[in-house]
Length: 327
Ligand code: UDP
Picture 1 (tube, rainbow, N blue to C red):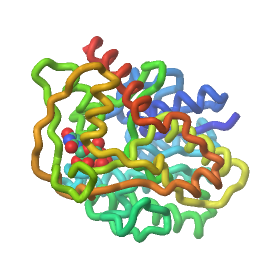
Picture 2 (cartoon, helix red, strand yellow; picture 1 turned 90 degrees about the vertical axis):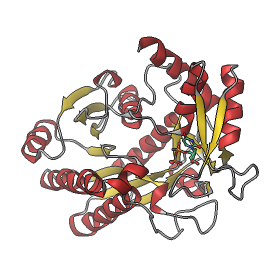
Picture 3 (cartoon, rainbow, N blue to C red; picture 1 turned 135 degrees about the horizontal axis):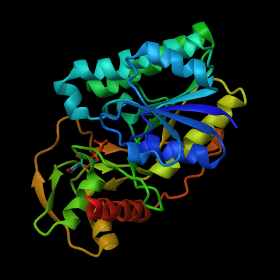
C-alpha cells in the first residue's frame, strides 16, 4: 500500500484513476479545486478541495499525509481555448504545476506521474508516432505540457525526482459500471458529442473537415479507453515505486478511426441514426494522429483491455444515458 496524491482527481481521467488506485489497495487523496471537476466523481477517495496555487495549504496537506507518489492530472485541456487564453494555460499547466513540484521537492517525494499529451508532438512528421518523434507543439496547450515535461526532467537531474510522463492520444470511454465518465462543460470531444446528438431528436454532430487526405476525408484519431489509460498509470506507478528511472511513454491503441467511422460505430452501439453536418476544418487539427505505444506495452507490460472502438463507445453510451437521465 502506498499513499498517493491525485491532483485533478475529480476530473474525467483523474476520477477513474483515484478509484482504480483505491481498488488495488492504495491510500488515495484527491486534490481538486472543483472548477471543472465534480465532487461526486470522487467515489471512494478522500477529497480535499484546494487550488494548486495555494502553496501554504499544499504544505499542510503534504506534511499530514507523507505521500509516496503524486499523480498530476489537474490542468486545462482545450486546445482552442489555449490559443485564445494562453495566459490561463501557462498559469494553470505550468505555474500551478511548479507550485506543486516545489512542495514535492520540499517534502522529498521522489515519484511523480504526469498526464501529458500527444499534442507535444505537434503536426506529425510520420505515423504511428513513437516517442522519438520530434517535439514541436503547435498550440499553447501542447507547449504548456511539454514545458512541464522539461521541468520534470530538470527536477530529476537536479533533485532526484523520478517521473513518468504519459502522452495520451484520444482518451474516451467510461467506467464499465457507468458510475463515472466524461462530463466536460463545455464538451468539445467527439465521442460524447456524437452520443449527445444520438440522445436528442434534432441533434446533430458537426464534422470538422471532410477534405483531409484520409480514407473518407475526415480526421483519424487513436481512441484509448480511460480504464486502459489508468491501468498504464498504475503500471507506471509500480515501476517508479520499484525504482525505475524517469521515462516518457505514449498511450494509444495504435489504430486510428475517422470521424465518420466513429459516427457509424456510435449508430451501431446506440441503435439510433446520428445526423451530421459538414463544417470547415478545425484550426490546429492534424489529419492523422495514431500512437506507436509498442515501448509502453513492452517496458511497462501494458495490455489494453478495451481496444475495440465499439466497446469504448458502449461504455461511454452507458454513462451518457445515465448522466442524461440524472440531469
Ligand atoms: N471532431 C469533430 N466534431 C466535433 C468534435 C471533434 O469532427 O464536434 C473531430 C476533430 O476535428 C478531431 C476528432 O473529431 O479530428 C477528435 O476530436 P476531439 O476534440 O475529440 O479530440 P482531439 O483530437 O482534439 O484531442
